[in-house]
Length: 431
Ligand code: ADP
Image (cartoon, rainbow, N blue to C red; front, side, top):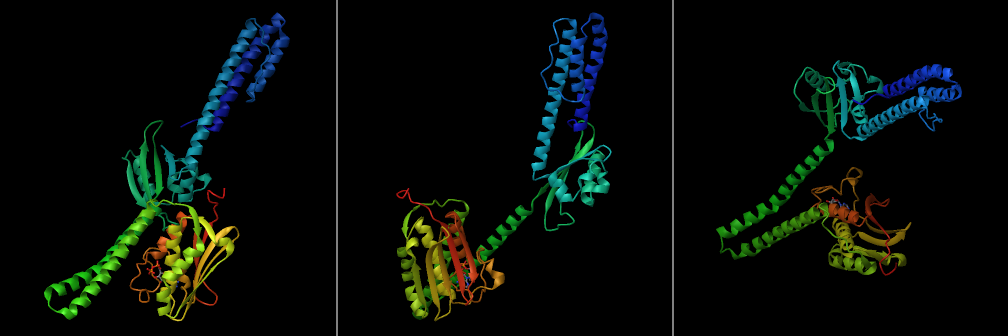
């Protein structure tokens, strides 16, 4: 362990005091030789040193034996001062490292007194600064930690264990306790918060379960109808129907796999962004045209408004196309017959804003925050059979790749409103 601040200060004072004593001895000698003026100056310096002020310049000590002794004492004090500074710097560095660590670190000495508790450990264990130098058994309220520290102090091996702290059971921590054998006995406890890792693991497991489920449904249908065809190859009537069902389910599987691969590419940051001036009118009206037949079939209208400032945007047109297509497709699908879909592009507060509103049922407040999650569907019974439940999470990823934001809200008059906002970037030609 490095020296404490008090120890460092005492060291400096001791060095200064040594100098004062030697100067007093010199003074006696000096008086004999008539050099009292120089000695008074040396004495003033030594008093300053004794108070911990080691700044220079030093007086002219002279070239005789009095000067040599004073100079060499002065150099010794300065050297000691440098070492004390070095130790103080080391200590400050160590404290800075420990306090900025995410891991909680706690050290106890041979008597079981807390010697060091960094910020993270203090936060995790809810310890006060005043707990320092107190027994860990009294200060730490966690029986598991107390037991492991006790074993380490008694000469036990390094041990690792999982724990959740009493006041916040939603967090999971892994702790490691190791005995310290150098510089006196003791024990050190290190704690890592693995809550986020656990969450990510849970999300991954849910995702795998969802993918398996989503793939199994069409796969079972394909297998069943293919077997029926094999069993009765001559039933021409069933033949056409079964092949059509197999085709529909195979298409659904293909779409799911395509969406999954796209998400995987986006997750891995493998989609490159290609910025170029994009004609927003052409892009949005093209998409509206693609859905016109479906919309007409449902007596829906799709209105497009693009303000002049929003007519051109420097962006990745392919990605913006996929974003708008997904939103318009959802609006058409989730809005009952006779509804209206409004697509608007404009510039608001220096940002490009594109919104897709509809006159459907809207989204229940509890679900608003979740529709961008993978496989999240508000109402499974109402969800269209062709949807994968991945569309909006792809939208969210794509918008992030374009450094924008997407939000969803319900309109006062009913219906959902999705709004994408993107930065306005100058194209290379405009710069
Ligand atoms: P899906 O393939 O099911 O459409 P999405 O990720 O595109 O998957 O959408 C997730 C869910 O969000 C949908 O299942 C639906 O419940 C809800 N949703 C999306 N858009 C709308 C909308 N315009 N109106 C109402 N609900 C919507």
